[in-house]
Figure 1: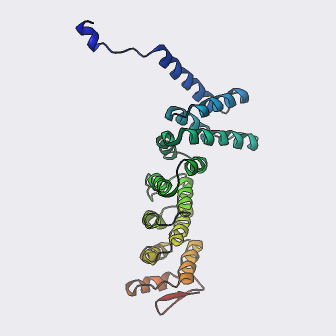
Figure 2: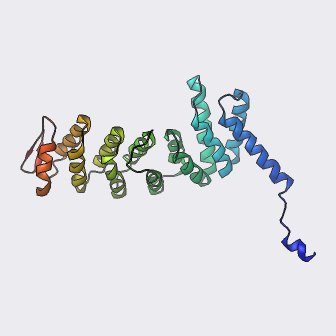
Figure 3: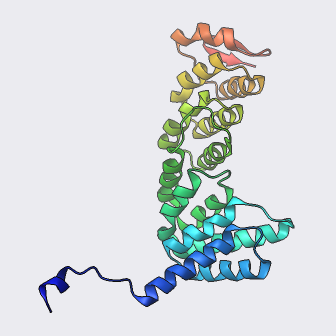
Length: 245
């Protein structure tokens, strides 16, 4: 072998190039609602059997659009979930990338719940939520869905992650955050809840905060009682440092 041969860039093998072309073709079929049903369903089946990160990335494109009739749409997305589960942890990075810009994370969360469990699942959900801040976004649904999912796994980490969203720019996100914080059942959330109550304009959320605090009988710190009293919605009062309904 000559010296130049040692530094010669290896050309991709014919099999590798063909595999890349096949993956690109299958991804194109999955990405379009205008592809023929049988061709698209075949592509979904083939990608689902691969169990690779590349296949997972392609499969996730199917979550970006909806098909009529709904039953067909649901069936195809269920196939995608099965394919992501087959890929296992190889699918995690593609799922993170997808969720960062997705209109909805309902279906990716279905896959995550089967790929991971326990603390691993919670940490992944926290990682996904950490991609978002409390500023205005055109579509708040992913934040709402992630907060709701975290509410099923109450812990100190979940409380810390959810509390900032009590003052999110979106009302639905704020409501979900308050609900998740209460699910943790930790009175250390009182300052964040009172701060949210003082800023809140939505009567629905004011009632949720006041009602949750009254139900739990958590004491309001002395330094927060004035702001709490002025922010309480009709039907609630502060009595001896505790909210009464």
